[in-house]
Length: 220
Image (cartoon, rainbow, N blue to C red; front, side, top):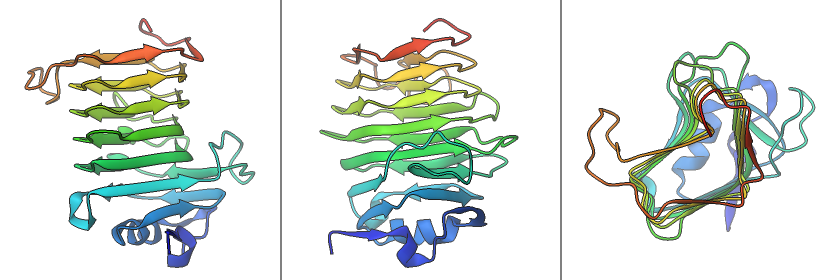
């Protein structure tokens, strides 16, 4: 079987049921994970590490920006007081596509999506991160990632940056949008440790053909 569905593990996707355990179980199989259209509430962060393989694909039925209960795509809803919605570490063959990570009103999650140490050909395509409301709540964060693409994504209404790129190399942010973030739409820094120090310079990173980057509190 080329992929498994989160519903194979008991996920409901009604915006009410806590689907954390079911989605994490699907991720832990090491197979490609399909998220059918729906609203999947999680109460703690999802993680993918090399413990279950160095490749990972997660895909859905589209970025959903509609009201809860009227899904037009696949949405992971963060009902979390802290932490990251989806954290991926050390995966070299990475492909994320066609889903949304969205905080419930009043959530205080600090990150929507964090990808660390991805290398050589990784792709995040048509993923939307929004409404991450914790202190410095960034929509998407990429740390020490090499030679990848962030394509046709959206990040908005977050309490930090739309896209935070820390110590990334040869990475393109192309045809993406960012709006109404409290800090910057796109912020790049050499600080890959989060402590104000740098062990990896941020270079050959570029923004190409942005759909729109506007109405962010800080520049860009």
